[in-house]
Image 1: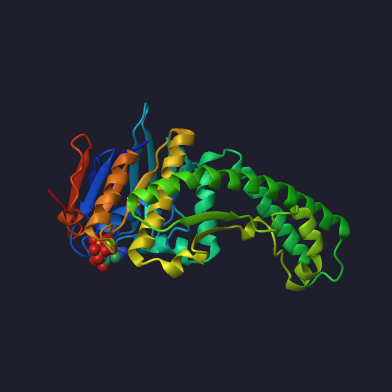
Image 2: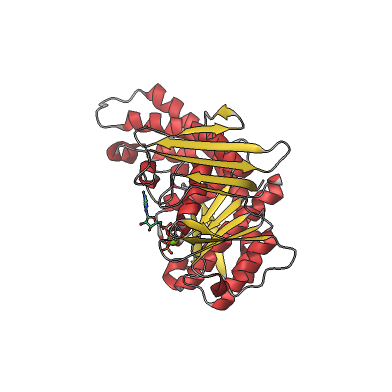
Length: 362
Ligand SMILES: Nc1ncnc2c1ncn2[C@@H]1O[C@H](COP(=O)(O)OP(=O)(O)OP(=O)(O)O)[C@@H](O)[C@H]1O
Ligand SMILES: [Mg+2]
């Protein structure tokens, strides 16, 4: 569901704003420091209760204000209001969803599936496996209702097993170890099956979108589950017990899962140019949005910061055409709209928000 209303108060340098975004394309333009990224940050905080710019949400509160208040309304019958307030001296934000206080953040994420494409998205290629696992689990979470419970079981079992392995235990209770090995192996096999099925469904979409965005030699996307493909996790845990004990933690398992992107058997980031990398990470994100729609009939909201950076005119145009074809709501920042060089179709609803020093220009 798209956001049909957005109010931002006390956020960074922005004046208090209340806007009616388009259900499709929203272009946010303005000079450096105008507040463009801050609008995306506000949307991100509303959907995930955390910023992509700072670990401490209080840094996003305007210097001279005591609190940050964000409000959004999802279109629907009835519409779904979402509100978040963060006081400067509070520990955490207060969040209200559809008239009630929010208890679990996963509920918020469920209502507002978001995809962010910004300079940090490159971490998907060049960063540690954690970023790719998060990417993968975003998709599984939004398409598999059983994911959350399974993932929590994995986490608990892993925590308990690691606690047993800590050096302070000179004797490990074999019954406890067997219990947690069993719990972990069972939940891990289920999580693996969900992740694997997800990547299988994602791969053809990713290939197609990437092919539309740019011409690249064959790039392969593959999933590694975090332990030997030929053996059960149970066997692997038993076999690695001594080394796990020496290390003090569990080495193999779904906590080590990864996605590999390879060209000519080399890691994609070792081969691709910066612009090509941007196309690859964009294709990964756009493919997730498309799969979400296929599986659940829900659309995600795209937050795209500084699209034009690193892309030539042709690639900007191809990106815009893909985004337009997704028919999802998108908020996209550009310094100057004319640099996009793209003519939106006449039936695409496009809203323009021009910012100057934190104020909307009409
Ligand atoms: N807590 C804060 N209170 C007030 N102003 C802030 C705060 N934090 C940052 N700023 C200022 O807010 C502005 C917001 O910048 P923002 O990153 O949103 O701009 P932008 O339009 O995305 O610029 P660019 O094109 O350079 O990316 C900057 O001028 C910054 O100095
Ligand atoms: Mg910016």
